[in-house]
Image (tube, rainbow, N blue to C red; front, side, top):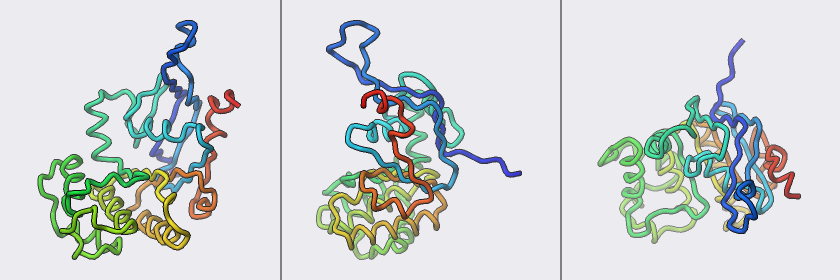
Length: 238
């Protein structure tokens, strides 16, 4: 019998933002996340949906390590990630986790190649990422190598998406997190992006965590989780 391996594990995790209007110390935090047990299997493709205010952004920040839980433990790829120091969490994130942000977060005045190289520098410590590696990833993402020297600000939205994925994949992450990337796209561009993303998941064999409020995208994924179903803090707020 094969033992399951988990990319993400939450064990009695809570997180609360400070409440400045609290009447007492016991009420000083407004609970946003309260997840008793949650696991994502290695190489699984998971779609997470949730209403505004349900804690989607907080959940992603906890998984990425930019927030620490108020209580409980978050393990990423078998590592007790939430218990690491801030510096070690930053290093672990750069080496093992790729993120495609909603606004892509490309540096507009840098070229496509420089944007990707920057991620390689922070992840693998490479001052200059191998050009062949960058070209191969871009080709697989249907991003012409002729664009590599072009500033990111001069690219179309679709091209910027592909650069954002290439940047996220340059360090060969075991976990890829994608945050609301299709909200500004028309139906055709959205479907093209989703197919590209799913093809990349198969090719690179990473765990994919995709967060969106657009339920029409759920059919692309092996598993659909409604955040409100696992987050007891949301249940209590209703």
